[in-house]
Amino acid sequence: MKILVTGGAGYIGSHTVVELQNAGYDVVVIDNLSNASEKSLERVAKITGKEVPFYKVDIRDREGLSKVLEKEKVDACIHFAGLKAVGESVSKPWEYYDNNIAGTLILVDELRKHNAKNIIFSSSATVYGDPAFVPITEECPKGQCTNPYGWTKSMLEQILSDMQKADPEWNVILLRYFNPIGAHKSGTIGENPNGIPNNLMPYITQVAVGKRKELTIFGNDYDTHDGTGVRDYIHVVDLADGHVKALEMIKKKAGLKIYNLGTGVGYSVLDIVKNFEAATGVKVPYVIGPRRPGDIATCYASAEKAKNELNWVAKYGIKEMCADSWNWQKNNPNGYED
Ligand code: NAD
Ligand code: UDP
View 1: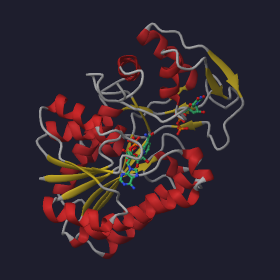
View 2 (view 1 turned 180 degrees about the horizontal axis):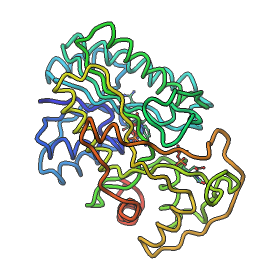
View 3 (view 1 turned 60 degrees about the vertical axis):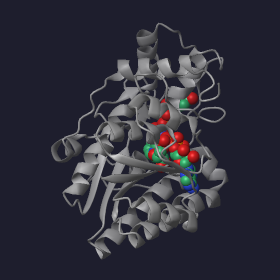
View 4 (view 1 turned 135 degrees about the vertical axis):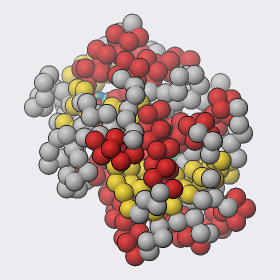
């Protein structure tokens, strides 16, 4: 079975290509390299011992996509390509709606023209907004997103669901990721944010490696066990494996399915700092700052549905997530730049 991986040179995409190739799938990657380096795929090839066919194509480029699909004759698509910086999406909403929504509309149109009506879509726990309850099950109502990035995920879920209902030949799996961190055990691929990291773990690793002075913890007055925000962190290799399991479901004619990919366990910001220090032996100086606008107190998954239906459970705990994030950062202080 041949899988088109859009955004396959990025953080989650590159880890997923490793797991797909290890599971015996043929993989074709397209990426416009707006937030990635082609080197990630060279490193993937070193890990798996298999070349990764790559096309530098933007998902909004209908002609470019069509050529790839004509040539490669893929069976299914795992769709990671998209812009993902929450803050940037507030200042550049048009760019986010164009890239993520217009891009996905062109992608799915080309997929159906080329008879590959199978898609696994990278959604996010952000679609639950401030969740009605925790642990969050897939039945939890979707909420108000606090930024255009979140709305692109919520709207694309709706678009893909409507398309599947109108044309049951489509198999659509929406995967709602919680907070991916960690890196491949080899320490050769990992998260490589541009500029100042928005997310907690890359910020912590950059403090630990000496690139930034201290972590600012965004608020310690939330209604949580220590006042700092609680999230469900998941090892990126577990997340990648969730996509391999989702493909099994596609083969069984999934129809429309929605799964949370999280561990079911919530850790606070201070828990993460302590676990990072314990796992790596490196101190993370921090200060307490004000709350970040749009943040919620607590967000963690019920991972039961993915366990029961996909036979997927997260294998890695917080110690490995911290140790592997650090292993990547310390071996590659400048990401993919030599
Ligand atoms: P990433 O930025 O590392 O990967 C996205 C990739 O898509 C990049 O390689 C980028 O160059 C590429 N891309 C962007 N726009 C494109 C376009 N128009 N055409 C072709 N390629 C394009 O991000 P990631 O963390 O690997 O995230 C992958 C997906 O998962 C994204 O859709 C993201 O929104 C979603 N997601 C990520 C998280 C997270 O915390 N990392 C959480 C929930 C959902
Ligand atoms: N966070 C923080 N300092 C940072 C980055 C994040 O205190 O520099 C907190 C943030 O307020 C949240 C948690 O860490 O409680 C996870 O934030 P992240 O941006 O990684 O993920 P998300 O908010 O999307 O869940």
